[in-house]
Length: 82
Image 1 (tube, rainbow, N blue to C red):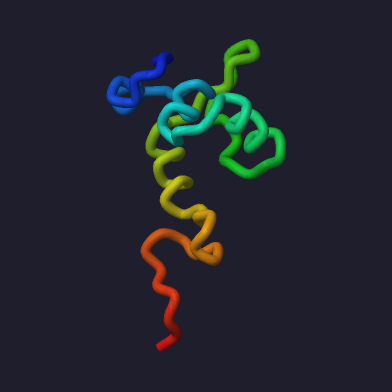
Image 2: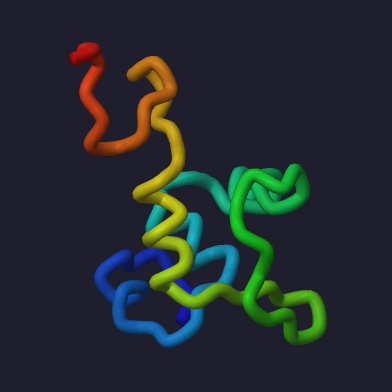
């Protein structure tokens, strides 16, 4: 599944770099840089020069990665110490 429609991306069995970019709301070059720097999961499959991921893996990674502007906390973590 490729294209700019993020609604269509959610139904695909495999996501390409373009699909991951659409899901994350970033440029394709950003996803390429994340991959090259080891800042995202390795592709689940590569066909020729096309990297592909299982959507569940990207969603899980997105949930767990630190967010900018919130002190590097992961989603769901509070900033106060108990």
